[in-house]
Image (cartoon, rainbow, N blue to C red; front, side, top):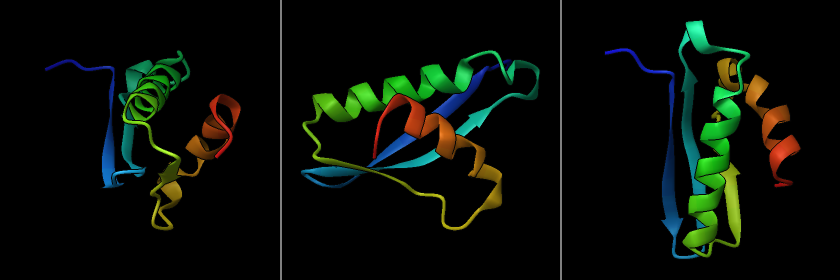
Length: 76
């Protein structure tokens, strides 16, 4: 299966969620795929009427680049 990327949103409670995972296939990095995934996750969080959306990185250095992307698209 050839995919560009994926992301996951976990409901923590009725008013908050957590971005659990975001991945972009190597061939599609630096092409805006992560931005589109994050925009979709944010829209879904807004539709669910979340007051809070957290970034669940658990100290994993592989997701640190997403931090600047998240702050660019949505102030957490």
